[in-house]
Length: 383
Image (cartoon, rainbow, N blue to C red; front, side, top):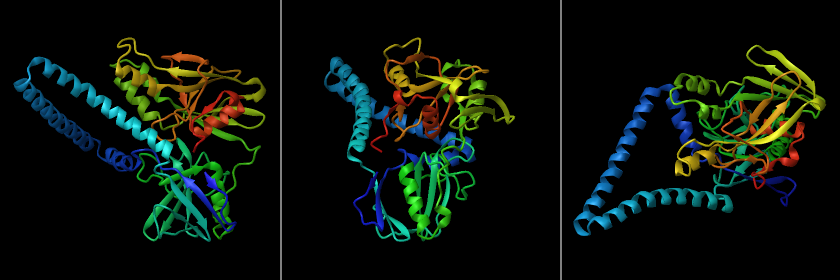
């Protein structure tokens, strides 16, 4: 969100924090990739230690109640500890999440002044545009969230993400990839439109490499289709090899959709061969919602959470000359919510996960090109 009642020489923007736990993920994920066995052993030891401490406290309380109050009190205490702890855990997390979203807790105020910018939570630091560089917010050639601006103030680094911001072809992206689970993550993010404003101001104030324009309206946009992780839910408990193969491939796009104002092309990225080309007028798309339901344990807490966390908006794209493409998007603004959804009356794909997944920026592009914008429900408008 930009605040426009500032002097013309400066602008103020409200930036949003990265996903919850992003800094921890930037430490643990690279360590896991470097030494998976050691990381796994650390997790096992931590689980055993937690279980031992919690179990010891539980047994001590039960023993004390049994000695002083008898069986009925012990039974009630058992239920209170088990269900009360779960309610306290989820109630605390849910309450904190609701409060943080309503209060704007964690937001930063960014002032673009002169030849740099300042950040409210880093008083005294001025991050100059002269040495700033651009990079990918996400993984180059993989799933991305947008573009990242890397700035420095002496030894201190600040990375600002531009959500859904697409740079025109040929733009230099020299900075390392930044994102959740990577060695470095963004420190805050703004919308793509605000990010473009910041780059334009930086370009006018000396660093012309930051004067990046978005793609021209008639320029084709490439949308990358990745294997959907939701396919794991329909694999049996003994299909370990298939699950491993899928999880190893989820960061490698399988297909690409090149779309412009008039036509679309589907490209097989393994062979770079054209699969099909069609005018947009002959392409149709249908909104659906994927829901996961187990065949047993109906009504259980575990089943309810699995179903809620798996619910995903899907579009089924019908292109002449090929099988329909089922494409989902699991993008989030905080890591704990869904960014997009469809109305409740669309077709429900129960236990029928989409074959592919796309980023939020690509999802918005496809929604617009295929005429689904009137149906789209966005939960990021406050951002």
